Length: 131
Picture 1: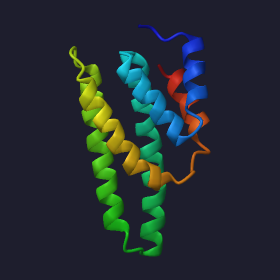
Picture 2: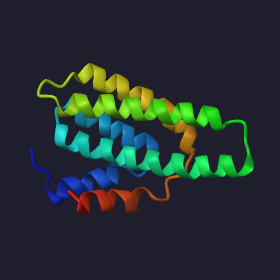
Picture 3: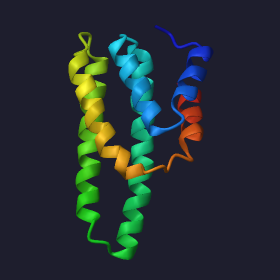
């Protein structure tokens, strides 16, 4: 399936916040729209990278003891994103495993961002322009 501009616009509209992004990702996975799901996984990965980089710098700068927890959360996020991406690129996508990975990511990232989504539209636009 090739993503049309209308489809990309609908994805951008669907991903205005964390809850809607993961809902859109679940919907894409369960309905077999693997190209859309891969795009959303890339978007989640870019957002996670951006968030954890900024939060990590702040924690190091202020010497917070949560730095170890931060590193563990980031590693877990990267692992789940990799599992999800691998499943989506495999010829035989394990939808149940993908949904489980999405649920884990949702739990890991929901508290981490806590509303810090001001870069979402910008990153979504950058990703679609580089496709």
